[in-house]
Length: 275
Ligand code: DGL
Image 1 (cartoon, rainbow, N blue to C red):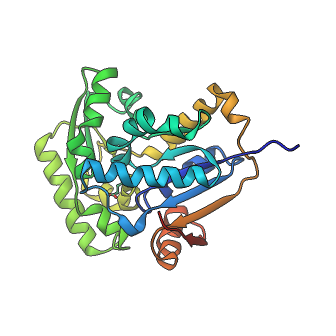
Image 2 (image 1 turned 180 degrees about the vertical axis):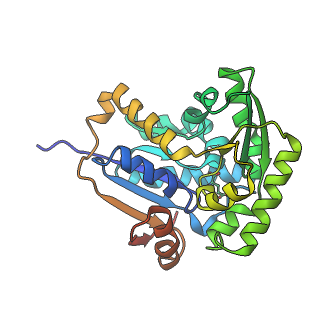
């Protein structure tokens, strides 16, 4: 009898997780991936803890039903508000071979490598900022690091609506960068703490002083996953290795294919799904 093999699920509220998936596939091309974007209910960043938890659990459940045994929550808001509950309360109901990982820990555990002067800025959704997840995690590893977190409520809608190259985007990027710098002019690194923000990278770079480096999560998360799979060879050996990828969205496939292809720099052919 042939042994059953599994996909890796990657989930985000919308398009943002594609920026993580892109790097995961670059570093780990051999596996089989299923991407699920809950575009129909995005953004998550302004929603309550309970709602983000419920939506995320529904998405993770769906990915397990779609033959995934490892799910990456490629969304900071969902990692901040739902990951712990899912890991502690829900995971055991799915069977002991199921795993869920978030994207905050891989970035916080190497935060000391981002900065020379221990002042890091982070831009993220309101949900991630108010959860204080980054502050709490970074303090565990590096008590001397001073993190200045700033919420950018308009940035996700700009990306979800395909407006990230517009003049409107310039206005909102400049406004939030200036606000962050007035809170802490000493930062020497800026962490993009929302997976949608890499699409605004050019504009962020334009308004951020040159000496401040920009930290993106994709490669960090991908390398951390690579090490995780090396440490968990029992799980790794159950994964399909056929380099396939399938995309699912809870909203229109047409707009997912159009905007999603900008994240991945390749054509996307998605299917619609309901949660
Ligand atoms: N991309 C998600 C994140 O990393 C948030 C987007 C949203 O607000 O839905 O936080």
